[in-house]
Amino acid sequence: MSTLAIPAFNAFRLTQSTFCIIEHSDVYDEHPYIYLKFLNDSTVLILDTGCGGKTMKPDIALTSLREFIETVEIADNGGRPLNESGKKGYIVVLSHCHYDHILGIKDFTSDSQIIVSGHCPEFNSGSNLPEHSLCLSLGIETPEYTPTFVANRYTLQALDGNVNVLHTPGHTPDELALWDEGDHMLFVGDTLYEWSPIIFPSEGSLVAWFETVKTLLDLVEPYANAQISCGHVTAGRPAKEVLLGAKTFMEDVVRGTIKPERTFEKRGEENIYCIRGDQRFSLICPTRLVGEVRQRAKMEWGSA
Image 1: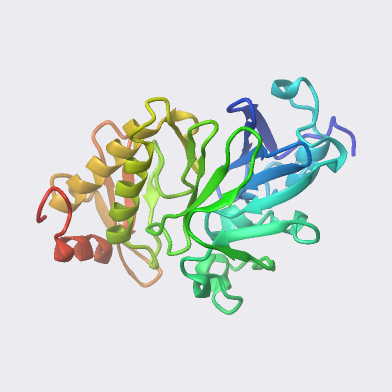
Image 2: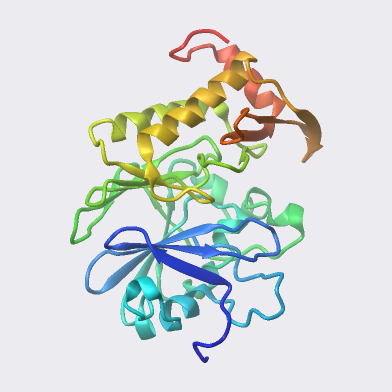
């Protein structure tokens, strides 16, 4: 296909070895952030695969993530495609199984290892995936792929410092993060982000989320230059600042300092929408999840 075809994606350099790819006009209004890292001379790591190029714009002709990576010239890459002609092989990591992170996986199922969290493998089983991916509720086809379930702290070797896979349940039971030792970059999927609601499905847990954020804060504490990149909106921001900001916001919600702006029903149960005054952090989640944290009352800051 001609490189003049308008793609559903754009890309910019995040670090010397990593690019952020944004699916910019998807029909679901998710605008997912996809990350590509050069592990070595023969292998490319892809974190998440987006919405499968399902676009709202009729003039977009290039909808395949893999074709974008292999054929579209990127200014930040010296005017060359990120993986020209597919010369390098792929390892694909899925931060979790929600549709806006897995719908592009079909491009890679024939020849690439697909890594997912081994924390809760039944969550990603074939019988559960249509519901847990939210494909069933959206009435869309669920992608088929064979995952490799990996343990916490599983290591992907890279020339500039290894990449560690971390189990980070909270948003979903299968949520994972990547810690890039060389770049001091933390990739957290949908655990949190700025300027758009942090959304928890029915299967999420705020109790687990607080535990995960504490673990991530402990991880980045020794690195003053550590940055965080998320599944939406936020990329290359100061990790400790963003993590602490999100944690403090969630604490205020649980304490009742920040009260719901509205409640509504979603997937058969009551959800709340809360937002901080400056709108940097906001939340949509089942009311039940906040109640579970209050009942647990084991947070560092005391009972809610």
